[in-house]
Image (cartoon, rainbow, N blue to C red; front, side, top):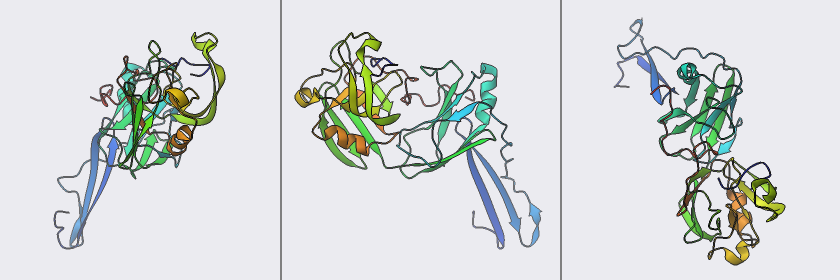
Length: 301
């Protein structure tokens, strides 16, 4: 829990003919196909299956994409576009039309109420299921912003607060790690959370979240899970309680024997962590964990 956040919460082609197809994923997961055909024995013509090409993109002022150019991300990372000012309801459909994802997947944009932003300042794209490892993605946010990124290997972790364990599935290989989660009354959020970032150490101060002088110190190998301050990090208490009892203030604690460091070194932004067996569920806009209804908030439905 940081000082600024609360931890809790070709049909066979005719001779001499060539068919060229461009597929672009745009808007609410709809696929626009542009097809043209030429024949060496006839003048160029348009086939009956032809579709108009996508309209030129307009400029989107104040737009920002959460993924950097050339970044490798985990299979759960949404493409999140935020705006310096809220987009009014009557302009959101047109704004979605200016957002294009080239990836060869079914997906959708959906407006999300970000925990730290106003309504209309964030719209996310996610595929129907987690990204396939190795997928190459190009994103256009209007005419002025383009990003290219790659989906890396798959890492999906599941924390069960009842058994005090975390199952880590990495490219099909599974291991189980003992953990300690939030103590009763300070329960770790249920639900799917996506790794936002990580840091080798983060200063956490309990006085900023109403827990008095419980802690004020640096915690190491910190994996950031929610905007409200939920982390998975090294915690000396896990040396005693991991695998046996939940004693933290809401974060997931790992032991100092190299367990925390190992997980920290292998995890990347976009990796998936799901918590089960707890109580309240993390809100969709509290980080990137809004996988439950992947297209409910699209203005193009």
